[in-house]
Image (cartoon, rainbow, N blue to C red):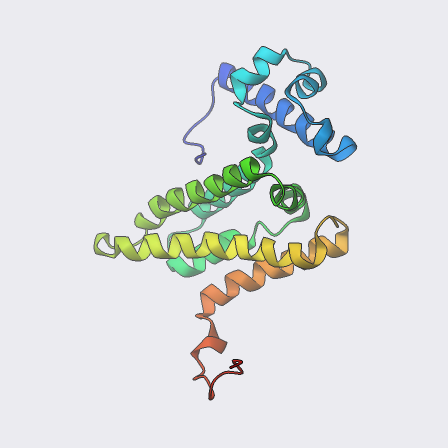
Length: 217
C-alpha cells in the first residue's frame, strides 16, 4: 500500500480493475449473505474470474475483504502528499485525515471493522494495513521536517493512525452494525474529534489531576 507515483500502464490498469472487481464482489457477498457466504469460489464466480485468478490476486478471502481499509488509508496518504508545504506538520496531517470523513469512504471500513472483531485473521490484516499506513506517513512527514526530528515523525505518525483506529473503536461500541446516515455522522464526529485532540494537545489532559481522580480503593 503506497501512494501513486505516476501514470499507470494499460496492463496495470487492467490488473487494478480485476483486483477491484474481486474486492467489490467479496464485500457484496458479505452484505447479502453474511460471513458464511464469503468463500473464494463464490467471490470468483461473482467477479467473473476463475478461482485460480482469485488466488493470483489475494492469498485469502480476508485479504480481499480488507481492500476497503487499504483504499481508505491510501486516500489518507494521497491527501497528505497533496497538501501545500506551507502548512505545519500537525495541521497538514490532521487536515488530510479529516478530509476523509466522508460516508462513502467510512462506511465499508466501519462495516469491516466490526466484522474483524470476530475474525482474528481479518483483524491482523487490518492492523497490518494501519501499521503500513503509519510507516508510509513517516516517510511523508520526513519530507516536511528537519532530519534530526525523525523520531518525532515516527511518534506522530503512529499517534495519528492510532487516533483513527480509536475513533472507529469508539463508534463500534455504540453503533456496531448500524451503517445508517446518522451512524456514519457519529463516526465522522469521532474521527474529527480524535484528530482535533492530537492537533490541540489533549487540552483536558493538561489540567492537573485533583486528588485521587475518583479512583476506587
